[in-house]
Amino acid sequence: MKTNRIVLLLLAVMFSISALFSQQTKSRIIENGGTGKYSAIMQSDASLPTHTIFRPADISTFTKKHKLPLIVWGNGACFNSPWEHVNFLNEIASHGFMVIAIGIMPEENGEKMKDRSQASQLTDAIDWALAQNKNKNSVYFGKIDCSKIAVSGMSCGGLQALEVCGDPRISTLVVCNSGLFTNPAGSRSGMPQIGKEQLNKIHTPTLYLLGGPRDIAYNNGMDDYSRINHVPVFVGNMDVGHGGTYGQPHGGEFARVATAWFRWQLKNDRKAGKMFTGNPCKLSLDKVWTVQKKNMP
Image (cartoon, rainbow, N blue to C red; front, side):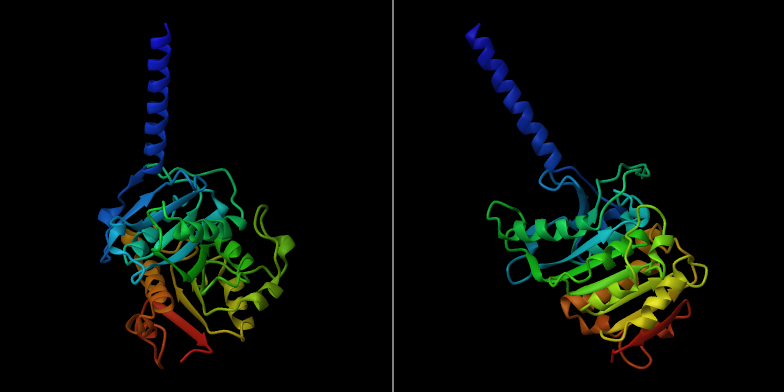
């Protein structure tokens, strides 16, 4: 009888370890890993069950001398899953970035999530990544560039990014299909209730990507742009409406432009920066984009 109990106990322990390992390594390949140099995966991690990670599949290529810049992302509608943005986020990660999105890893059918997220989950992602970078037992030990951090989000997620924009650890801010309400009380339930005075807390170069006049966030975003005069700011409009191009193959044009911005701001890639610098800048020559910028070369 005692032997049977020991066997059952060992089987239970083995099952628990197996379940934990499965949870830690749950992952899926999106669009063959993206078009970048570093084939990416979407992954959940047992130590961060509230978020979804997009990162290069082969983490061994990153070292203390070649680190992963960090991007944290808030979802449209404040959904607690990045199901709408997997193509977009995976594509960015394939260019050598660690992307952590708010919410649980979506299933293959891309289901909608009813649970609402909070802006604090963006800073939770930063806290986790910085802790992993210091943890000798983590696969990310010494591989994350803690000096290069972007906060970004789409629609309600863009408002969440603006809500935490004052965090001194942030290197750049990217606001997609979003902008602060002149009257926050008139915003939808569950959205951050912050006013235009929040723009004064921005302390980094900032990119707005909007969907043109058909975008319900267009007026708010362009009003933000008109008020931001103390940091470099660039706004690009593509006439696609509020949905952007996130669900298109490899995230479409929004992924191409956002990736160039991240390469410039987080990797000091001057060639990528030419999309935004110069008069005219390269993006202004693209017929599908209308651009404006301030405090930028």
